[in-house]
Length: 156
Image (cartoon, rainbow, N blue to C red):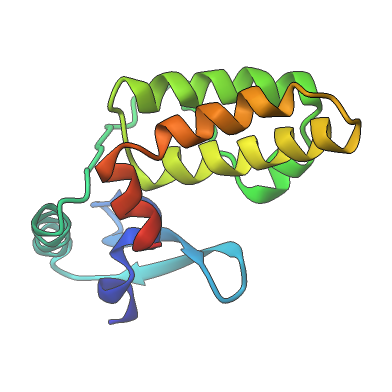
């Protein structure tokens, strides 16, 4: 299965035990966009355990959250969302993801989203000859000192 070779590109996995369906969202590097696949598997729990074991072996952090009816879930940003943000939204989200990474809440999604948002902020301020872009570049460089983040970026 192609997805086994692209575990670092997986963004989200939803498991429906009742219908025995797995919905996998992953980043397709060749198309530069997020794709989604639905897979029907009879032994869904075995698949889930095998996937978690493989990801743990590759030292990829696994985050799990049970969906509770009525509880709002955090929306995950995709490139389209980031491209539609105004500068104040970008700056607010930059600080949110910077805090996550500095507190070692490191995942493929957090790292790539942080760098995509930072890139947009730097583009915005650079185009206006505003020296504020140097602050964001320096913060990005400081985040790159983390070995785990380097490993995620190299493997993505």
